[in-house]
Amino acid sequence: MTTETRHDEVRRWLAGVGTIAAAVNAPVELPALLDLIAATACELTGYEAGGVLLADDGEHALYISGAHGLSAEYVARVNAEHTIKLGSGPLSAGPSSRAFRTAEPVAISDLSEDPSFAPWVAAALEYGYRAIVAVPLLVGGRPAGTLNCYRTGVHPFGTDEIDLLKTLANQAGIALETARLRDHERRTIDDLELLNRSLTAQHGLLEQAEQIHHELTAVALRAGGVQAVADALARLLARPVLVADPAGQPLANAQHRGVLLDPAPIAVAAGDAAATLLDSPTGDLMTAPVVLGDELVARLWLSGPVADLGPLDRRAVEHAAVVCALELLRKRTALEVEWRLRGDVLSDLLAGGASAALAARAESLGHDLTRPHSVVVVKADRPDGPMHRMGGPGGVRRLLGVAQVTADGPGPRPLVTSWGDHVVVLWPEGRPGPRADPVDAAEAIRQAAQRAFGGATASAVVGRRCTALSDYASAFRIARGALELAQLRGGLDRTFTVPDLGVYGLLLQLEDPHELVRFADGVLAPLRRHDDHRDMALVATLRTYLEQGTSTSRTAAALYLHPNTVGLRLRRIEELIGVRLSDPEALLQFTAAFMAEDVTGSAWGSSAPAPDGGPLPGTARASTSGADRARGRRGRKT
Image (cartoon, rainbow, N blue to C red; front, side):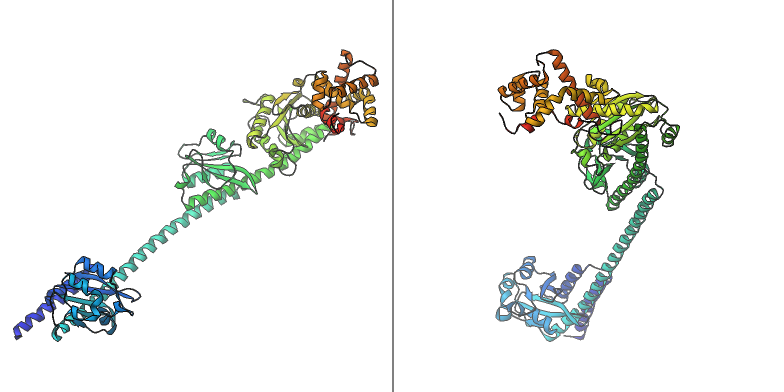
């Protein structure tokens, strides 16, 4: 080779090295750089194909990562089916593995004659490759892969040729290290940018969380009430918010951009059990429970589906539910204090108190007893039903709360409190609106209670109008007795007045109930004495006989007795009383005695004292029906 030719060769190699350096400075992505190194090696040496192999992260294998002139199918078969290993075994004895481990070039002039290339020789010959040289790529003094060059014919590789490839491989190693550093730097910059965006987002979330905490805590600290909670949540979430009690009655309604939620569909869906934040059945609303202990006291309603809320929005709803529960607890505590004070006023009224001091105490609680009031009494129809169970100790706290919410409104304030198992409402005259009439007000309370307690029923009675403080004791006694009597006789789930009871209503209005007791005992005493000694249930048989329209067969069926047995008992009754049961006057007398017994038992027999402070004699006998008592005494069918 002449000197000029040698200079041309050096210039050509330097141009190739410059091409690789320029690619690194461009910069070029790593896969493109590897293809460029393989292409430059082929151009400088005249080889038909070249490839750059890189070790995996654990240096377990080499993979062709860049190529020029190599068939894509050949590259895929070597990488997938005949992976070049760096450990031990037949796939780790090839020229590439040896060049990587020794950091020295390895050349094979004829692939078909070298046993170490046996795993790949079939594929190489299939694609026309007959000779190979593998030169290590060093990065930071350590092998990172190899530069492989292929010839399509048998070719002995000379020393000068291999030295030039080593020079190119060294430059390629530098380029590879530079590219890797640049990639690492780019990834670091991307990570830092991502971290910066994340920190910015977190800062925004923290500011939003701080705003949520500040606004809702401020509501709690200033005792702003449920409406203030709804207003704050509507501002934070930019959507209207409604707070409703378990029956669906609105407690607060907060608008957003002039839009308010309609309470009507909410009242329909309010019967669902307490749960976490969830979508309503229609999908256009979401709801969250407001819970005190295990008791559902209200629900938050918001427009839109739950999926629209982010994590902080959900946290805001949960926080608002807690603050709302605190506000309701504060209101409930204040109400319970008021109820106790009102209960004291009612106790004094029922004890016959009629002083100016009593009226002044009522006025301090916001009730003008100088105005005429009607006495309304409400009671759950089932003593073991949900109105009592859900109310906890005292049995009527929840029912009392429903009555209070229903009674709230403009105009003179009704006095709402409890007496035993009864809710008592003194409804004032002059109330505006659709509930001005006490009967309408009582019906509204009863229906609201039914909604609040999942369909459990209550009954309500409207007593007489009271114009003086001295009227309330008698009015309550009559109304309470009417309610107990109606429930005893199966008159459940309704609102009525005392006159609706007919004769019973008249008997209840007698001022001296002892006269009723004496009358009933005088008529029935001979039968009771006989029952006490003979255990024949004559009183119960007579009551059932009257209830069944003086039919012996129906009486026998009701008492599970033979008709002959009923006939014998009726004749015995006639003998003891000295009258004929066919006599209309005798039947009227017995009917009146039983009605008097029912009235005295319902009016004074359970939780209220008689007017003179002592229990009424004989009233306990009116607590069950005649058929029940007869079946209890009978023992067996006769």
